[in-house]
Image (cartoon, rainbow, N blue to C red):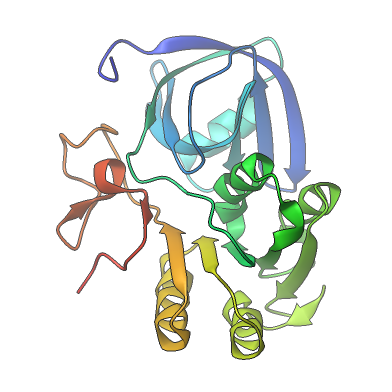
Length: 242
């Protein structure tokens, strides 16, 4: 059951993605769908939610932001153990026919990367990868290896187009017929993606980030517009806030 005691994972490999982000490859596989997440626990430290980068083997990616994520990235090495619960989340990414655009900022690339790996027709997908600077870009090379056309945007213009992911998305939606937009990243970016898609009458699926303490709808800490991100999401097809 989801509420059972955490299960142990042995870290088999640690991949450095950029100056503050690492990917942890474990010794287990998990029955999970793109968009779902797990709760990772370090005894005596804390328990936090992380999106899945892959399910076989179970793989998750961590950006150093707070104390817990910094502890994972600085102290956990290959051979060490961590514990997890999950997968959680009823709202998941679902593949749509036709042309698709994926929009991500920061660690938003993680569930979208997992999604693309599950999509057979990868030529139907384009991905917009955004970051404040060149050194903060994530997974752009991973997406290219999967055969996707990658559009890079940086706030300072140090790589790709100068500007924001939403600017690149608007240019695409204004010229082409897109069946669905998938997005994950900062809340302000996701709100603008939803507004942009509504403007052009394009369907969208967005994965929200929120503070989560339980993962299965008990604590209520992830409430958003009357919805629980952990249970009703984290993927939504309509903006949950009125």
